[in-house]
Length: 95
Image (cartoon, helix red, strand yellow):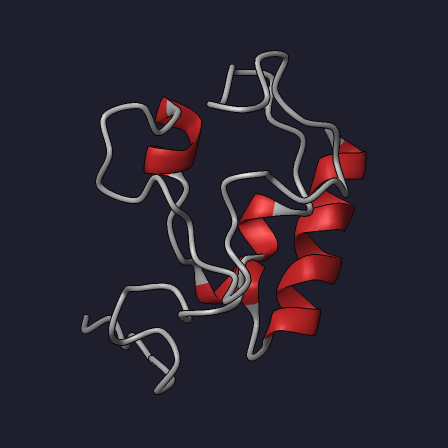
Protein backbone atom coordinates (compact mmCIF):
# COMPACT_ATOMS: atom_id res chain seq x y z
CA UNK A 1 0.00 0.00 0.00
CA UNK A 2 1.22 3.51 -0.81
CA UNK A 3 0.53 6.49 1.45
CA UNK A 4 -0.29 9.72 -0.31
CA UNK A 5 0.88 12.91 1.36
CA UNK A 6 -0.57 16.09 -0.07
CA UNK A 7 1.22 19.33 0.68
CA UNK A 8 0.15 22.84 -0.17
CA UNK A 9 2.57 25.54 -1.31
CA UNK A 10 2.32 27.02 2.20
CA UNK A 11 3.69 24.02 4.07
CA UNK A 12 6.37 22.69 1.76
CA UNK A 13 9.02 25.15 2.96
CA UNK A 14 8.55 24.14 6.59
CA UNK A 15 9.17 27.68 7.77
CA UNK A 16 7.00 30.41 9.15
CA UNK A 17 5.73 33.40 7.23
CA UNK A 18 8.05 36.33 7.87
CA UNK A 19 6.16 39.19 9.45
CA UNK A 20 3.33 37.05 10.86
CA UNK A 21 4.26 37.16 14.55
CA UNK A 22 1.13 35.25 15.63
CA UNK A 23 3.17 32.86 17.79
CA UNK A 24 4.62 35.90 19.61
CA UNK A 25 1.17 37.31 20.38
CA UNK A 26 -1.54 34.65 20.74
CA UNK A 27 -0.05 32.11 23.18
CA UNK A 28 0.91 32.65 26.79
CA UNK A 29 4.58 32.10 27.57
CA UNK A 30 5.42 31.19 31.16
CA UNK A 31 9.20 31.31 30.63
CA UNK A 32 11.14 34.48 31.29
CA UNK A 33 11.77 36.58 28.19
CA UNK A 34 14.31 39.41 28.14
CA UNK A 35 12.18 42.42 29.01
CA UNK A 36 9.34 40.23 30.32
CA UNK A 37 10.77 38.39 33.34
CA UNK A 38 7.41 36.77 34.19
CA UNK A 39 6.67 35.69 30.62
CA UNK A 40 3.57 37.00 28.88
CA UNK A 41 -0.17 36.37 28.96
CA UNK A 42 -2.08 35.08 25.95
CA UNK A 43 -2.94 37.86 23.53
CA UNK A 44 -0.14 40.17 24.69
CA UNK A 45 2.50 41.18 22.19
CA UNK A 46 5.98 40.01 23.17
CA UNK A 47 8.34 42.93 23.75
CA UNK A 48 10.88 41.17 21.55
CA UNK A 49 8.59 41.34 18.51
CA UNK A 50 9.74 44.25 16.35
CA UNK A 51 7.64 46.60 14.21
CA UNK A 52 7.96 44.18 11.28
CA UNK A 53 6.61 41.33 13.45
CA UNK A 54 9.99 39.61 13.56
CA UNK A 55 11.57 38.21 16.72
CA UNK A 56 14.55 40.24 17.90
CA UNK A 57 15.84 37.12 19.70
CA UNK A 58 15.76 34.76 16.71
CA UNK A 59 19.08 32.89 16.78
CA UNK A 60 19.96 34.40 20.18
CA UNK A 61 20.63 31.94 23.03
CA UNK A 62 18.43 34.09 25.31
CA UNK A 63 15.38 33.16 23.24
CA UNK A 64 13.13 30.95 25.42
CA UNK A 65 13.18 27.25 24.61
CA UNK A 66 9.42 27.23 24.08
CA UNK A 67 9.89 29.83 21.35
CA UNK A 68 12.74 27.89 19.77
CA UNK A 69 10.58 24.78 19.63
CA UNK A 70 7.50 26.47 18.21
CA UNK A 71 7.58 25.83 14.49
CA UNK A 72 5.38 26.50 11.51
CA UNK A 73 2.60 23.97 11.07
CA UNK A 74 0.15 24.56 8.24
CA UNK A 75 -2.75 23.05 10.20
CA UNK A 76 -2.13 25.50 13.05
CA UNK A 77 -0.92 28.55 11.14
CA UNK A 78 -3.33 28.33 8.22
CA UNK A 79 -2.96 30.40 5.10
CA UNK A 80 -2.48 33.84 6.64
CA UNK A 81 -1.72 35.80 9.81
CA UNK A 82 -5.38 36.23 10.82
CA UNK A 83 -5.89 32.46 10.63
CA UNK A 84 -2.76 31.85 12.66
CA UNK A 85 -3.81 34.31 15.39
CA UNK A 86 -7.30 32.79 15.62
CA UNK A 87 -6.12 29.18 15.59
CA UNK A 88 -3.35 29.70 18.14
CA UNK A 89 -5.77 31.63 20.40
CA UNK A 90 -8.24 28.75 20.20
CA UNK A 91 -5.50 26.26 21.01
CA UNK A 92 -4.36 28.43 23.93
CA UNK A 93 -7.90 28.62 25.34
CA UNK A 94 -8.25 24.84 25.10
CA UNK A 95 -5.10 24.24 27.10
